[in-house]
Amino acid sequence: MITHQNFIAGKWVGTAAALAVINPSDGSKMAEIARSGAAEIDAAVRAGHDALNGPWGKLDAVSRGRLLARLADLIRRDADALAKQESEDVGKPTSLARNDVAVCARYFEYYGAAADKVHGETIPFQTGFSVMTFYEPHGVTAHIVPWNYPLQMTGRSVAPSLAMGNAIVLKPAEDTSLTALMLARLAEEAGFPPGVFNVVTGLGEEAGAALSAHPGIGHISFTGSREVGVLIQSAAARNTIPVTLELGGKSPQVVFSDAEFGDASTTIVRGITANAGQTCSAGSRALIEDSIYDSFTGLLASKFKALRVGSASQDLDLGPVVNATQKARIETYLDLARRDGLPILAEGEYGTNLPAGGFYVKPTLIGDVPPDHPLAQEEIFGPVLVAIRFRDEADAVRIANGTPYGLSAGVWTSDLGRSMRLAHTIQSGQVFVNNYGSGGGVELPFGGTKGSGHGREKGFEALYAFGALKTVTIRHG
Ligand code: NAD
Image (cartoon, rainbow, N blue to C red; front, side, top):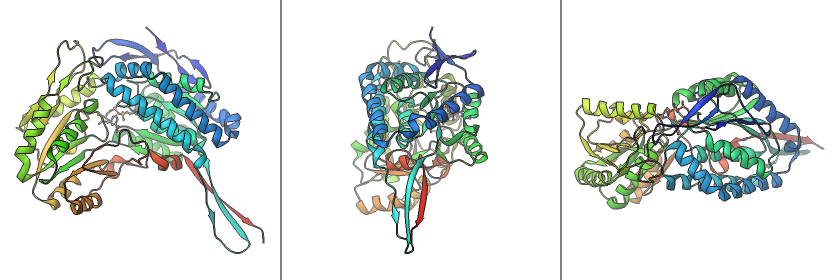
């Protein structure tokens, strides 16, 4: 049994205590990781500052970009090994993990190419003055990453920060830290100087809390639950540093009677069942116009019934969910649906030879859910789609906006005017018309409104967020 160590200041360092890594496909223990605390976090933050005071702090943007591009190449070289590890660790079907590796490489490629394109401005001012702006790194940035897409989230968070010239401390989720450690090895091989890329594993309330509270951190990037997001923002407030929070959603898929049903139903089912529904931007509420409610839910139901659940390596439509807690959480919501008499319109099936001890949940479609019911309000984070009726456009917008969240929304209609009206009136960080999901679109700014958080990841928005703007005013007469 391997016990994995932290990567701090370019060295692999163990801890006295360890945490078990559980394979979600069969519940077995597959490895151990370091259980870190304040001391390890402090060492990593100091290593980051040492790197900024050393060659990394003086490296020009072109050279930084080349290091990121080299890391992208190495991720692609090791794609099979990374995908296998990610698939085993998270429980996701192997083909999905392969896509995650490709997207992770794309983040380093995209931000590697962007590193030398961060331009300031010259600003016209009074006669006798010249004014210009520069982006400078925040210093050492903290990255607290969830367990649903470890490689994608790490790339999304870390690549723009490195491109801007920061040093990073990454705290992966305790359930799924293994590919982050593989990335650290590749970052070392790519030639990042010691202390630029630090990975410290451990529990959220220990290592995560110590990292977010550390006075040496200049920015925190967090993706995960709202509850922890509030703790992170409070910790950042005490050190008066900026944060990017991505806190999930209860995203609506709004289907009008003039939609193309085939496309809409296939995409909606995939959107809530991919990664066993453990996706922050999953479209978890299907809002369906009254006149087509029965026919459209019938189509959704037939697609749910065709879904098969298996172990990660069986590579079926869905794998297990990540851990026993997550399985229990999803089952609590399914029990609530039964208790409240909500119709279960369809379920998928378990495939053959399902390993015992895994955390499996059947994808489930639930009908006629009142918009204010907990199943229509709370993030279940599992393969559960709730169908809700609406009367007209105004009713659809009211229901779409009637949750604490605002991350993503889908609109399905062939009426261009209506699609534009909804694009404006739905309160959401992104709106997709006749398509859904930006999983692979590293170029597209992504983030939430309301309870889904604030700040934007992906695209150039994320790059600028990892820099502090400095204004230089010269009086020359
Ligand atoms: P979480 O928010 O507890 O964990 C996410 C990350 O935060 C992990 O790396 C964890 O170690 C860290 N963390 C936890 N407590 C911390 C603390 N006090 N200080 C600093 N860091 C801390 O999420 P979870 O418990 O793993 O999942 C619970 C629910 O959160 C899920 O059911 C789902 O609804 C939501 N979730 C959302 C996303 C998303 O992509 N938005 C991802 C994972 C979970």
